[in-house]
Image (cartoon, rainbow, N blue to C red; front, side):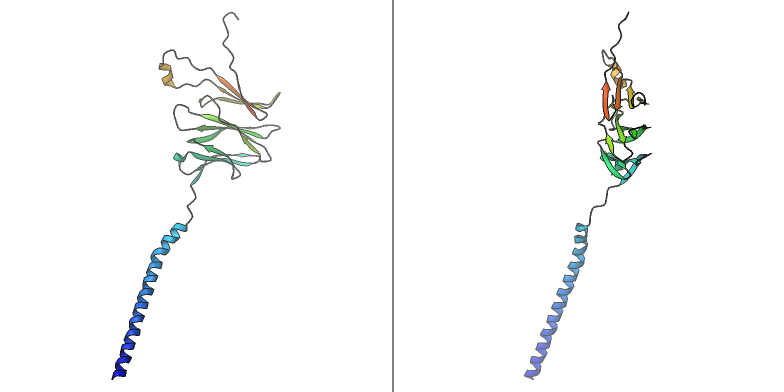
Length: 207
């Protein structure tokens, strides 16, 4: 009887150990199921920002495009040639190409307008020079905030692009005492150099 009782007690202990071990395995499995998605989420790479082509044109070196990165409010765009970034267009709400010229010797010249989103300065401009070999150069912003300059290409005696601005001012400025409209300005891009020409002084009577 004593031997049979010891045997039953030993079997009961072994069964209890199996129950405890099975319970621990189930708990470990539950923790793995709960923690695995969280660990996967932490290691997941961020999604790429949305991209939108807002304007494009074809050059001899390939497609030239203005691509918005993210939302419009991010004010982040890129100038790309054949999908390759060649210039960052920062802090502007919009941008677009307004003129394209093919020259005899220096590739193509493109005029790009940019707008920061405010009403005080409707537009500024960049000149983009795209050589047939794929080299791209971009000038700094320039202009008088007017959005409709006269743009012309001159081939003789030298190749140059000219932008003439009439002298921009917001309408509310006319209400200010002593208002005088700003003078016209002219910008010339020649041999890779952008230069503002001095406005001619007003002529005197009798001269």
